[in-house]
Amino acid sequence: MHRTGSVTDNKAELMLNTSEASQLLYVHPNTLRRWSDDGIIKTYRIGPRADRRFRRDDIERFLAQLGKNEGNPHKCSL
Image 1: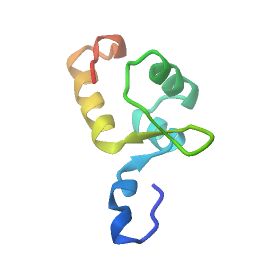
Image 2 (image 1 turned 135 degrees about the horizontal axis):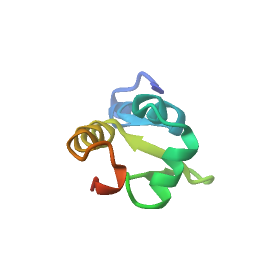
Image 3 (image 1 turned 180 degrees about the horizontal axis):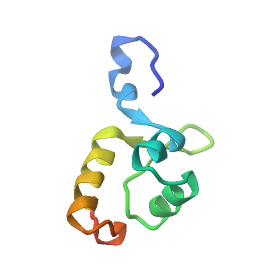
């Protein structure tokens, strides 16, 4: 997770890049990008390149729903 050490950047500490989020979900980064594009998982776009960021809370909620939905990400809603 990216950390800047500043108190004002606490929210940034809760954001994960695609690689970090995909590791938590045990999926390939391209799978996570596809889920993001399909609206299965919430994504935040930042910077001039519109890089994807994912809130850790959203990832944890998604994992909980995924377990309840027999591992089918298309049945999850965030």
